[in-house]
Amino acid sequence: MAETQANSEEPRQLASVIAYLGRLENQLDKMMELLLRQETRIGRIEHEVGEAKRDIVEVKSDAKMLKNTMVSATSEILSLVMRIDDRQRRLQKAEA
Image (cartoon, rainbow, N blue to C red):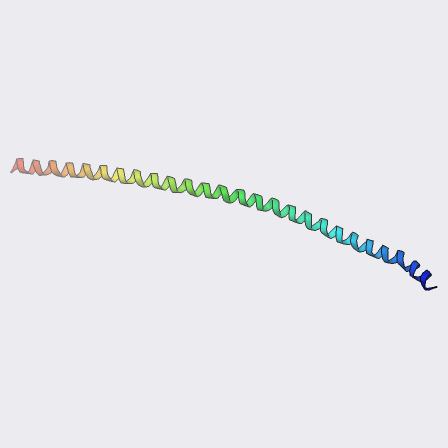
Protein backbone atom coordinates (compact mmCIF):
# COMPACT_ATOMS: atom_id res chain seq x y z
CA MET A 1 0.00 0.00 0.00
CA ALA A 2 2.76 2.42 0.92
CA GLU A 3 4.50 1.52 -2.33
CA THR A 4 1.38 2.34 -4.35
CA GLN A 5 1.03 5.70 -2.61
CA ALA A 6 4.70 6.50 -3.26
CA ASN A 7 4.28 5.57 -6.91
CA SER A 8 1.23 7.82 -7.25
CA GLU A 9 3.03 10.85 -5.72
CA GLU A 10 6.14 10.39 -7.84
CA PRO A 11 4.58 11.78 -11.05
CA ARG A 12 3.27 14.81 -9.14
CA GLN A 13 6.71 15.48 -7.69
CA LEU A 14 8.29 15.11 -11.11
CA ALA A 15 5.73 17.50 -12.58
CA SER A 16 6.50 20.01 -9.82
CA VAL A 17 10.24 19.70 -10.45
CA ILE A 18 9.75 20.05 -14.21
CA ALA A 19 7.54 23.11 -13.72
CA TYR A 20 10.12 24.63 -11.35
CA LEU A 21 12.91 23.96 -13.85
CA GLY A 22 10.78 25.53 -16.58
CA ARG A 23 10.36 28.70 -14.50
CA LEU A 24 14.11 28.76 -13.85
CA GLU A 25 14.77 28.37 -17.58
CA ASN A 26 12.43 31.29 -18.36
CA GLN A 27 14.16 33.46 -15.78
CA LEU A 28 17.53 32.45 -17.18
CA ASP A 29 16.38 33.36 -20.71
CA LYS A 30 15.22 36.77 -19.48
CA MET A 31 18.55 37.34 -17.73
CA MET A 32 20.47 36.35 -20.86
CA GLU A 33 18.42 38.82 -22.94
CA LEU A 34 19.06 41.53 -20.37
CA LEU A 35 22.80 40.80 -20.35
CA LEU A 36 22.90 40.88 -24.13
CA ARG A 37 21.19 44.29 -24.20
CA GLN A 38 23.57 45.57 -21.51
CA GLU A 39 26.56 44.26 -23.46
CA THR A 40 25.32 46.11 -26.54
CA ARG A 41 24.90 49.32 -24.53
CA ILE A 42 28.35 48.96 -23.00
CA GLY A 43 29.81 48.46 -26.48
CA ARG A 44 28.15 51.65 -27.67
CA ILE A 45 29.38 53.57 -24.65
CA GLU A 46 32.93 52.27 -25.14
CA HIS A 47 32.76 53.37 -28.78
CA GLU A 48 31.51 56.84 -27.79
CA VAL A 49 34.19 57.15 -25.10
CA GLY A 50 36.80 56.26 -27.71
CA GLU A 51 35.44 58.95 -30.02
CA ALA A 52 35.42 61.46 -27.16
CA LYS A 53 39.06 60.66 -26.38
CA ARG A 54 40.00 61.18 -30.02
CA ASP A 55 38.08 64.47 -30.04
CA ILE A 56 39.92 65.60 -26.91
CA VAL A 57 43.26 64.77 -28.53
CA GLU A 58 42.22 66.77 -31.61
CA VAL A 59 41.15 69.74 -29.48
CA LYS A 60 44.45 69.65 -27.59
CA SER A 61 46.35 69.51 -30.86
CA ASP A 62 44.33 72.42 -32.25
CA ALA A 63 44.95 74.41 -29.05
CA LYS A 64 48.70 73.80 -29.35
CA MET A 65 48.66 74.86 -32.99
CA LEU A 66 46.70 77.99 -32.08
CA LYS A 67 49.15 78.75 -29.28
CA ASN A 68 52.09 78.37 -31.67
CA THR A 69 50.34 80.62 -34.19
CA MET A 70 49.69 83.22 -31.48
CA VAL A 71 53.31 83.08 -30.31
CA SER A 72 54.53 83.49 -33.88
CA ALA A 73 52.15 86.39 -34.51
CA THR A 74 53.12 88.04 -31.22
CA SER A 75 56.81 87.65 -32.04
CA GLU A 76 56.26 89.16 -35.47
CA ILE A 77 54.32 92.09 -33.99
CA LEU A 78 57.04 92.62 -31.39
CA SER A 79 59.68 92.59 -34.12
CA LEU A 80 57.70 95.18 -36.13
CA VAL A 81 57.21 97.39 -33.07
CA MET A 82 60.93 97.23 -32.31
CA ARG A 83 61.78 98.17 -35.92
CA ILE A 84 59.31 101.09 -35.83
CA ASP A 85 60.77 102.29 -32.50
CA ASP A 86 64.28 102.05 -33.94
CA ARG A 87 63.28 104.09 -36.99
CA GLN A 88 61.55 106.70 -34.83
CA ARG A 89 64.72 107.07 -32.76
CA ARG A 90 66.77 107.48 -35.94
CA LEU A 91 64.35 110.13 -37.21
CA GLN A 92 64.45 111.98 -33.91
CA LYS A 93 68.27 111.94 -33.96
CA ALA A 94 68.29 113.15 -37.56
CA GLU A 95 65.90 116.02 -36.70
CA ALA A 96 67.93 117.07 -33.70
